[in-house]
Every structure is written in C-alpha cells, then in structure tokens.
Amino acid sequence: MRTDERPLDVIVAGEANADLILTEVPPLELEQEKLARDMHLVLGGSSSITAHNLARLGVRVGFVGVIGDDLLGRLVEERLQSAGVDLRYLRKLRGVQTGLTVWHTRGRKRAGVTFPGTIARLRAADVPAGYLAQARHLHVGAYFLLKNLQPEAAKLFQRARRLGLTTSLDCNYDPTERWDSGLLETLRFTDIFFPNEDEARKITGRAEVRAAAEELARVVRIVAIKRGARGVLVASEGRMFHVPAVKTRVVETTGAGDSFNAGFLARFVRGASLEECARAGVRAGARAVTRVGGTAAFEE
Ligand SMILES: Nc1ncnc2c1ncn2[C@@H]1O[C@H](COP(=O)(O)OP(=O)(O)OP(=O)(O)O)[C@@H](O)[C@H]1O
Ligand SMILES: [Mg+2]
Image (cartoon, rainbow, N blue to C red):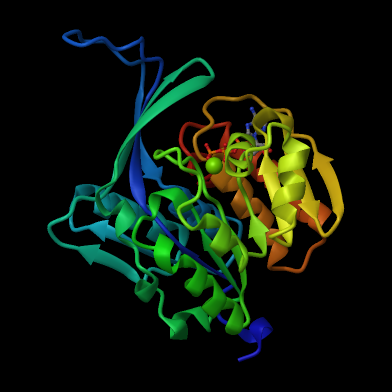
C-alpha cells in the first residue's frame, strides 16, 4: 500500500499509565500527614498522552501498549477510546497492575514517583508488521522506561522504516541515570528525536544545549530539544533554529513535552515544513500547560 493511502497516520507504541496529580503538597516527612489542595486522576504516560492528543488534533492514530486488567487500566482505555484512538493492539495483562505516577506539585515545581507495573512490559512483538504497514509514522515515547522494548527497539524502528514509515522517539527521564540503554543504536533508525534540554545534555555529556543538538543531529535527521518556557531548539541536516514558547497562563506542566510531540507530528505527517512543525509543537505544549494533566486541555 502506498503510504499516502494507509488508513492510519501514526502508530504510537509505548507506555500507558495513570497520573495521580496532587497539587500544592507541602514537603513530606516520615510519620507525618499533609494535605493537598486538589487531586486529579488522569491519563498519564508519555506515549499515551501523545497518542490521545494526536487524535484530538485530528490525526488518525493507533496505540500499542500494555495495561493491567484493573481499574487504572480501564481508565487508560476509556480515555484513549474517547479520543478516538485505535486500540486493537492494546494488550491487557492479567496479574500485573497498570502503572501509576503520583505527582506532587508546589508552585511551578513538581516531584513524581512511579510504580512501573505494566509500563515496562511492551515488546517489539506487540507491534505486528501487518499493523505497522497500515500507518505512515511510528512514534515511541518514554524510551528509558520501556525495559523490555529497549533491546529490540532498534530492530523495530528498522522494520518500520523498511515498511515505509518514518520514526520518532522521545526518551524522557532516565530513572537509572545511565542515559544509554541502547538509545544511540535506536537513534540510528530514528527520523525525529524529542528530548528535553536536561535529557539532551545528559545523553551527550555536553553542557551547552547547541553542542548537544549538533551532536545528536549527526545521528538523527531532526532533533527537537524542548526547553520548557524557552521554547524549542531544532537541529536538522546542518541547520539550527529556535522557536520561542507561546506565552500563556501556566497551571500545571505535566505532559507539555508529550503534547509538543503531538503538535509537531500532526504537522509532520501532513508534510509541513520543519518550522511549521516546530511552531505547531510549541502551540500544543503551551495548550497543555493551561490545565492540570497532559490531556485536559485537548478535551475541550
Ligand atoms: N511554561 C510554559 N509556557 C509556555 N509553553 C511551555 C511552558 N512549558 C512548556 N511549554 C511548551 O511545551 C514544550 C515542551 O515542554 P518541556 O520542555 O517542559 O518538555 P518536557 O520536559 O519533555 O515535558 P514532559 O514533562 O511532558 O516530559 C516546550 O518546548 C514549550 O513549547
Ligand atoms: Mg519529556
């Protein structure tokens, strides 16, 4: 099938979990109890947030991932379904709990703790070649959490490319602080890499963001380094440009990066210029921070 005739634009493969966001939490101390101002139990997971928001931006998207047969799994499934994401390869695993990240916010800062559960369970074999062949682009989020996929990720991307798809990767934070786990091998078959500034520095060992971008752009065709309220730095095939963030009222920033990915990819699969993709990413990131959680601003 020609890529422009394929029924799906994007397949997102990765982790799906819930986020429990407790706002304005004072510092915790053992043997004490504190109160939060608000709580939000919402769709989390870098990959699942990107899939959800892509669908809300009108992109035809399928999600491949693993959830538990439990309450949080049902929450994940319901949120993705309501956005219109194709879930035929969402696998339900019995006996393992769906992952959960608990975020505590205080002002503009936040701290999180993740129970991985099903988060690490995705394998390359969960993404059938026949399904890949129905899409034009493959995106994987939260690479550093996908322990089972890591040894097979480069092969998965290589297979996707052979089937005519372009590929993108968001690594997110590495809780092991090793900053490799086969990432560089996978990047050899990646068209677009979406780290944030801190991650780009730690992966390359370069303190200066432009040097990190240059180094990554030697391996990947397009590097988009997300810089929070500063916007994004894009490096591609010998050129580099910066797009400032859109000024907005910031409520809570969970999922801004995943929403950036969605905005960027929504344009990329329509053949837009790199500048247009980056501007759409920055707009989607700014939209995400106006509500608590990564998807609320895309549900209205
Ligand atoms: N305070 C903000 N004001 C406006 N736009 C923002 C703000 N924070 C983030 N964004 C937009 O969202 C994009 C992605 O955010 P950020 O750099 O925080 O990504 P990230 O660290 O990968 O996020 P995540 O926590 O989702 O992994 C930024 O490039 C920017 O365009
Ligand atoms: Mg991120």
